[in-house]
Every structure is written in C-alpha cells, then in structure tokens.
Image (cartoon, rainbow, N blue to C red; front, side, top):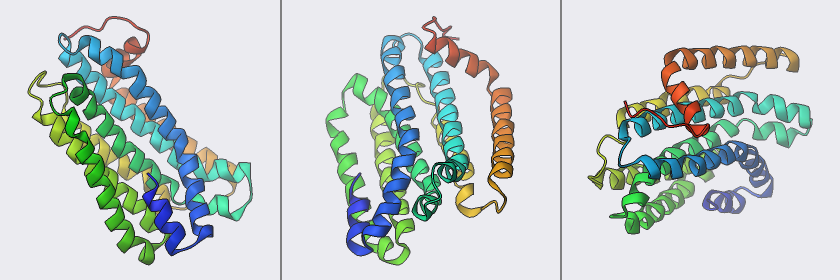
Amino acid sequence: DSVDKFFLNSEIGVEASGIYYIALTFAAIFSSVKESIISALTPWVYSKINSQVHAISKAFNMVIVIIGFIGICVSFLANDILTILSSNSELLAASKYIPLVVISFYIIFLGQLLNIKTYYFGNYSKLLFIATFIGIIVEIISCYFLIPEYKILGAALSRILAFSAQTLLFLYFSRLEKESIGLYNYNFLFLCLILMSVIIVLPFFIELKVNLFISIIIKSSVLLLIFGIILFAFKKDFQTFIKLFRGKNIDAT
C-alpha cells in the first residue's frame, strides 16, 4: 500500500506525493465503507454458508452493486466537496486522481469478497500471501516504469494494476475451493466491477466547467438517476440486502 507513495516521492518529489496523499486520504472514505461492509457481511456468510448458498450469492451481487454506487458518489462529488472545504489548489488537483484510487479500492473489495470463502474452508488460505507478494511485485514494476513518465497518474495506475493482479489470484484460490459451489456469480461480479469502474472514472476525463452550485445539481441529478436504475433493476435483491442488515432470516430461494 506504500510502494506507489514511496516511488512518487523519490522520483517526482514531495509536492506530487502530497497531492497523491490527499487523493488517497479522501478515497479512504470509500475504503472505510467497504471495510465495514466486509466486517458486517462475513459473520452472516459463515453462519449460512452450508445452508443458504443461493441467498449468499444474491447478497454478494447486491453488495458489489451498492459499493460500486458509493464509489460513484465519492468520485463524482470529490471535486465539489474539496472546493467547499478549501480553495487550496493542491486539494483541487488531488480530486482529479480520486476516481482512480476509488477504482483500486473497489477492485480489492471484490478480492476481499472472494477471500471470504477461502478463509472459511481454509484449504488454500495459507497460500494467500502469494497474492500479496505478486501484488507488491506488480506495483514495484509498474511504479518503476509508469511514475517517471506519468507522475501522479502513474502512481494511481500502478495501484490499480497491483490490486488487479492480487484480486485475480484471490479469484484463483477461491475457485480452487470445491465446497459451496455457486457461492459466487463470477460473471456478474466482474461485469459489475467493470461497468461501475467505467462510471467511476468519468470525472477523470470529464470536467464540468460550471459554478459549484450548478455542478452539485447536475451531479446529484445523475446520481439519483443511477440510483433509480439500480433500484429498479435489483429491487428484489435490494430487499434481501436490507433484511440481511436487519438481522432477519433470508429465504434460501
């Protein structure tokens, strides 16, 4: 988690490292939410993993969608929130890279979901250090080549590449576990990851050159539209998700 910051500080300097650190700190809002979701979800999964595989799979699908939407909110509103907090140019410069950092956290969140099964059955959990090791190697190599060329952008891309490599290995170990087949709808999880990431990254490419009030109105309207589409498309799964966090039993069908 520190390799990109180390390389950026060494190759580019303290100023670039400071801007990147601000982006990481703001994106930590999203990271805290995902960690809370994992902590809340894991005990329930362990209590139902041998009896309600289908219900768990549906919950995983809903969780990846909800976390993706939260990531979209953080990405879309980052610049506006930082503008309200301060007119400091460094803060505003950092907002450009927040979407990329959010994507990296989103990717590793999927890896954490996949690890729930691996930790429970324990047949391959002792090998998970390999994923971390490979992730570090990928990040070192990526930082070495990308940061001198792309600076802060290179650091953010290196983090995405490293977490992607790590998550793919988490996927591999998860699929090696033969128990509770059907626990994950892998196609849906990765398709959702890709689609949500495409939306999350939009503020990196599209800059609204309007005043703060208009910007918030436009972005809030878009977020409400996206939420409405999600709610319409996943109404039944969303109800299941709410029941889960109310501590109610969930029908395995």
